[in-house]
Image (cartoon, rainbow, N blue to C red; front, side, top):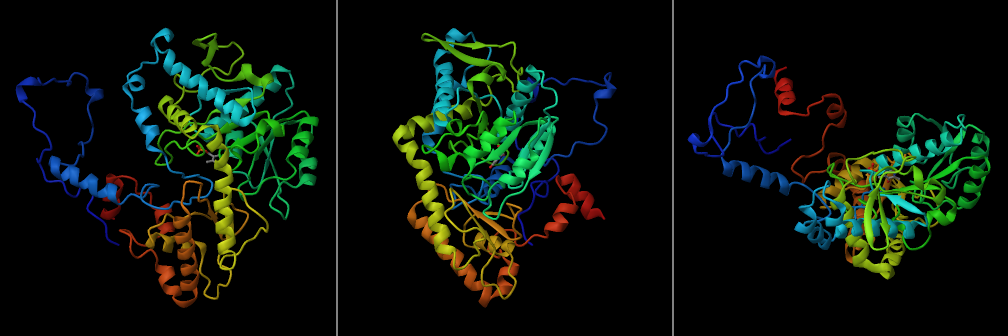
Length: 487
Ligand SMILES: *Cc1c(COP(=O)(O)O)cnc(C)c1O
């Protein structure tokens, strides 16, 4: 395994990356505050400015993002983030604002915020949105808190259980647990959809509601959605829509019209704001009319042409500092305005077309566990004709050699060799055709050169890693690394 030196390994004692006039900076002694002094020596790399710049520039070139190449990471909607979003978000009119500024001085900023709330309501068929949650999972938590609050407000204290299909995103059961409610998992049927009989069996007067991902994590549209929402409502529960991946439905159907009461949307998926790297996301939560007053504070409201912030007594309180990730919200609003209603209506259509094009082109080489059309992503269960027992992991690693990001693998958990491909609507026919060509080539290599696939990737700075070792040996920092090498 070869890699460039760490910045600590470039370090030379007393080398400095700055020079400051000494007399401008007096020395302070904090000896009388012994508790505040470090107990161990501070380990910092000692490098010149040029070493530092070169190091990080070279590291950045090894990064792979949507702007480097095809990135079909299923369930993540890694669509291109248009540059106009960045232009708008970096405008000083927005970046120089302070959240404590009087509202009359920030009318334009509040207007953009308010109009995004309204646009999302229109797109999803719900009454109102709060943009405050910081991510999809955070939105789920807020939505579940609204659900919980609703039942408590009706003194219906028994309702503490949430139904979640086994095909759900892992964050659904996690958020339910964090919210202090109990998960009831129900099975999928052979078509990969909610099994109605399992659902019926799970219903009772202890059900707070049901969380449903649609299209589900197999990339399939739930056929019986109206029956599902009716069953849950009749049992006194609320319907939660995990709309993290709204892309496939954009402009086609609206969760509100299908009977959902609460939903979240990931702006960092469907609405083209930066995604990944732990960067700031945004997971707006929308609700039907009767739940509006539970949405977290502060709310942004409009009276005639005046925008103002309101804190509502029955609300959950505050779940983020101020208004969520404002500059992320601006990017999403810029995306919506830039596409306009007409083009926004084509997003789901094209995303679905692209996924089905790939599905059809690869179905002779990769095993399709579920027949029929998919939505915005397609799931295969490993190679079809596979005499050398090549795993999905090997296929994914080999893709890196061809300059493409690997799709999501081993998710959903319903199959053993899942590979989940989501091209999004922003890819050209030529890029998608190239991906198909490469995937077919890998299927061929699996028969003719299996050892190559088991070693892959071979063209990347770091070749095949030992994932078991990486999971066991927790080397996260330079200090861990030194510890490890001492042994
Ligand atoms: C991505 C995703 C989430 C979680 O969103 P985060 O912003 O990563 O917290 C939840 N549900 C589904 C279906 C998703 O695809």
